[in-house]
Length: 304
Image 1 (tube, rainbow, N blue to C red):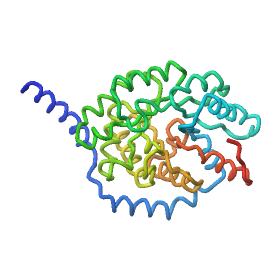
Image 2 (cartoon, rainbow, N blue to C red):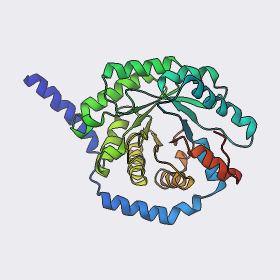
Image 3 (cartoon, rainbow, N blue to C red):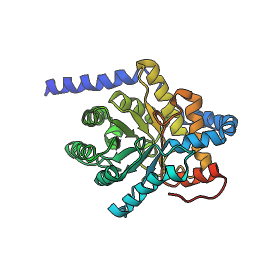
Image 4 (tube, rainbow, N blue to C red):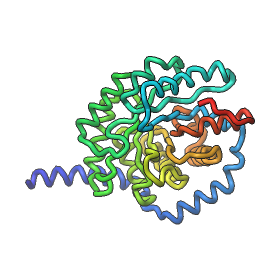
């Protein structure tokens, strides 16, 4: 028992040592004030046609409905296939995001080489299942054609201080992904504070995340500018510490073009222009694609 306690303490110390390199003692009110100042002073300059085109190219076009079927996902994918012919002057979306059982349908029908196939996995959206099931589901999604995987941290483990349990799962899933991108969702609306969002961001990156993502879109509140600000600060500090660039993906509740421009502005101001492409910046959304397209074309467009 003493041996186990020693091992547990060693693991705990490992994660606390990682966190100690960063400023995690944040005040929510201070973050809110900084975000409000940034939005008031910087967003308007980014409300341009070129920015909106870039944002469109950063979309993970998402369908995660209970009613999804092979037929509906096939139609969804065919719209992405048709996009280039219809809008030859615009870059397509970054990826199609679906449940893992539809990876094969998308893989077999997607004709656009530069569009990725993202699958939610590992007990999405609650992350409440056996680690073995999470690993198996991820491996099956990749086998069926997924090129990117989106998972949710074990929020319950994190909030109860079981950093080892949370991080071990991410490490094991990343091992299955290999070179394929792993996006780790923090479910920021459940974390309760800026301090917790900062800690979860660092631990997720420390455990192998290629992207950190705000939310599943299945819980309120979903993405917020305040969560995005904290996560981008964490990415910046982690890059300064490790020289490893991690991507950022807000998702859930991005309901307007203005919302998207706000997230673009936060990324630009904190992380800089190097992050302003779909290699390091994504937007998880279903409704935003048509809204952005309408703004870009100057008329209401319902293509997707």
